[in-house]
Length: 89
Image 1: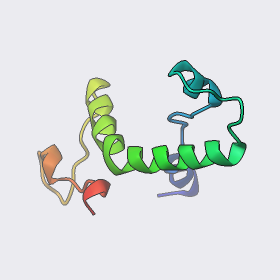
Image 2: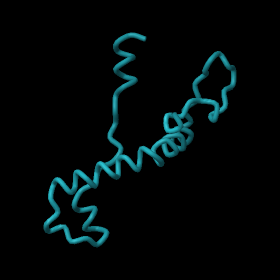
Image 3: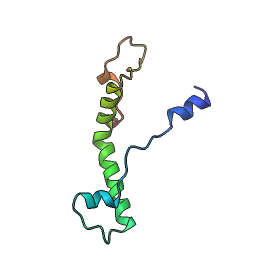
Image 4: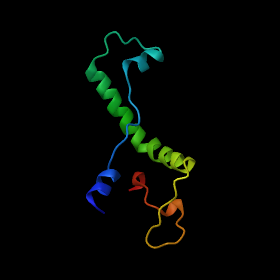
């Protein structure tokens, strides 16, 4: 793998964010919500998302976009369940 391919592999794309308006939209009074509080909420939501929903959602969207499953260990037709899922490591 060359340097360009390596950096392409590691390029992140934003998934989501949270703002005071989101809290307001679900009925909370945001008048005195500090940046520190928002950061804490964002970190907790990120952890919860990555621990559960992220990997399942990623697989669903990859399937929706018809991204093929990569060959692994020389197997001709790997099953999705046979591949390493980072949430199970």
